[in-house]
Image 1 (cartoon, rainbow, N blue to C red):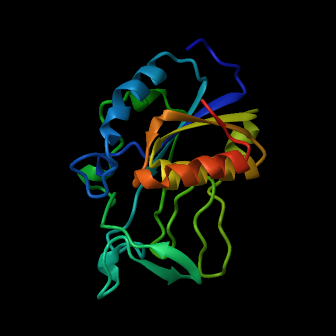
Image 2: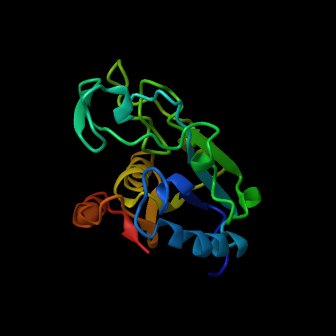
Amino acid sequence: MTALPADVALLVIDLQPDFMPGGALACEEGDALVAPIADLLAERCYRTVVATQDWHPADHASFASQHPGKLPFETILLHAQPQTLWPNHCVQGSEGAVLHPGVDWTVANLILRKGTCREVDSYSAFRENHGPDGTRPATGLAGWLHERGIREVHVCGLARDYCVLWSAQDAVKAGFRVKLHWQLTRPVTEANDGMVREALAKAKIAVI
C-alpha cells in the first residue's frame, strides 16, 4: 500500500492468541491474519495505529463459568440486554491475552485495553457494552483520535462478527468515515457473515 493521508488511522482489533486456533475462543483461520497485518504495519502506510486488547478479570461476567448451569454460547440477560456467554478468554496476564508476538507492536501509537470491568462486557473499541445504569460508557478513543485530526478509520482484526463490527459501527457514530479490511478479519461464526455485510451496508461502512 502507498502512504495514506495523515487523517486516516488503522484500528487493529484483538489480535490475540485466545482468538486463534488452539485458543480459548478461536476464530477459524484467525492466525492467518498475523503475517498480513504485520506486513501492513511494517509498510508504515498508516501514521496512526491503534491496537485493542481484550483484558478480562478472571471472574468476568461474560464468562459462562460465572453463571452456574450455563454453557458457553448460551444467551442471558445482563443489565437488561442480551449477553452471549463466552468461554474464559483473554484473562489478564495470561498467554492467551497477549498481543500476538508475530507483530511488531512498537509501531502502534496506542494500545487500548478493554473488557477490564468485571460487570460489563466490551466488544467495541469506542464504547463498552451496556452497564448497570443502562448506558454504554465511552473508552475515550474517539476523543483521542479527534484530537489528532483523524477523520477516517480503517478496521481489521478479530472477531469480524463481534468486536470488529461493533467497533466499526461505533466509529461511524463517533463521526468518522469508516472502511473495513474484510480479508484481514475472521468471524467467530462464519454463518454470521451475511448479517455482518448487511450491518456494514446499513452503516455505510465501505469494505476494502
